[in-house]
Amino acid sequence: MADTASVASAPSASVIPPLKALTLDQIAAGLDGGAFTVVQLVQAHLDQIARFDGYLHAVLQLNPNALAIAAALDDERAKTGRRSLLHGVPVLVKDNVATHEPLEATAGSLALLGAKPVRENPAITRLRAAGCVLLGTTNCSEWANFRSRPSDSGWSARGGQTYGAYHARQDPSGSSSGSGVAVDMGFCVLAVGTETSGSIISPSTQNGIVGLKPTTGLVSRDAVVPISPVQDTPGPMARTVADAAAMLTVMAGRDPHDPKTNEIPFAVVPDYRAAATTGSVGGGGGANGSAFRVGIPRNLLRKLPRRVLAAFEDRVVAPLRDQHGVVVVDCACPGLVRFLALSPAQQTDYMAGEFHDALPQYLATLAANPQGIDSLAALCAFLKATPGEEYGEDDAPETKTTTDEDKDDEADDDADADDDGPADTGTTTPVRDTPASAAPNPSPPPRRNIRRLEQTMRITRDSAEFAAARANAAYFAGPGGIQGALDGTSTADDGADGADSAGHPNNPDDIASPPVDALLLPTSAGTANYFAACEGHPQITIPLAYHGAAAKVKYNPSGRLVDTGPNMPFGVSVIGRKYSEETLMPLCATIEKLTRARDEAEDRRLAHLRG
Image 1: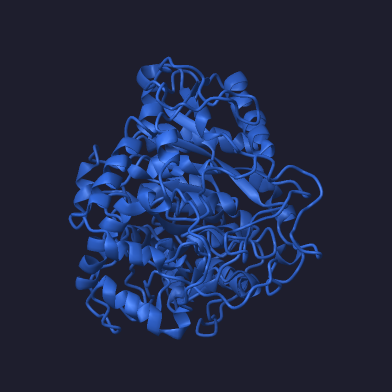
Image 2 (image 1 turned 90 degrees about the vertical axis):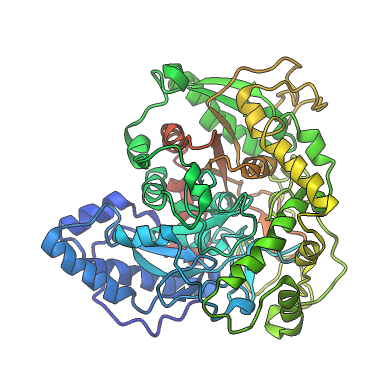
């Protein structure tokens, strides 16, 4: 947990709404009505961190200037009013995004401790200019989960192991692990995450919040510890669609230090919050004024648990179609079989080759680099030699993964993995109410390999492995994946016969489906997250429901974390065409109103984390 001792005391607030459900509108109303001050708001969040984070380990570092910044914002508001809807809003930032505050940006590694980028990320500058209070940084999966295979999401040498709030030793997913937990628990109102493939979406669904992975290039990646320049992006994490949309409106925009932002097709960033709060999916909300068309890529839903599919159909699909005039059609991602035939290395060799070049380039730009890490070889040597990095080889197999998060396997291995029934914890003692120190699967102290970094050492942009993987990724980014499903590309080459656990065909037929405005599917269909990341399609996950109280427990590959279990949340995703975020917002907001999943969050959390 972050050290709060250095932060000065401030008056406690008595009329701030519950922090775990606090919204931007409530903050604006409270400040304008004199119900509380920014100082009181910030102090309330610091108190929340002090109360709960000793168990969860979500917050890595606190900004010692937070209360002084809050006081200045109070003075400014008294004189000239609020800067924006985000005036005084506490924000936490993932530990791989540079700021000008006295905060580190280390990707969770001791190797970058004390390293100072020349600039801060422009999205951080924009959030500050809008009046946000940068409260501190959040723990993340070390090196964005590009260090080990398998890995424990939410573990870093700097921050230790982050846990989710819904089950003892809950896997928080990653790599924006602390950001997801912090938003859920009311440690902040908004958080900045980053994603290469699943790193915003997966921890958001796992912690029951809204995660918005924007089109790659809509938000600048400058001064972010890189993995893949093709796929990396910062993005908003929030409790509501409207709040995530408001955050994106501030974060987005061109940046001379990130050429990818020159591809933004508009001169003025849209008001995404207005689209979320006033837009409609009915009455011509689709392309060219037609009815909004949503495609469900059925072949990606195989092996999903019946409970997830039932919640998806009953809470989202049926009411969208029957009550909101949305046209719902079945479609498919044509390249699924080709994708599933790839090994873990073949899935990620292109990211490894991009990381091979991107990391040394980033290190060369640092204004300070106390550990002298200037290459991948130097990094690997440091990790092996530094006890706090817990390096060691073991016999754990290389689990198949579809993203830079081992969490995002192709759905679940067992379609009934979370059906209600006798809980199978793998132990003789129920897991849910045991303390965090009680491992569900007793094991010796962790030994954490560097297999993904070693993969990166081997793969360069000139290697045959990189060329093959990049070609595959281009196919999955285009006709074989999200774009193919959006455009209605034929599914004939899929070869996926049979039906999912709800009876829908995996390969509806060999006739091309009609083009759609967006794709809709449970977020736990992890292959979709990979496909969306390959070419930077926007994806938003919205809380959908929770696993049953008697759901079976499923551990992560190391056996140290609970990947799926009773009362843990899961979400539904909307994926669209590049730069279509404004069009997607009304659909996302409508889904949020249909599910109202966060209304249940407090009752689903572990008992000692309520209140």
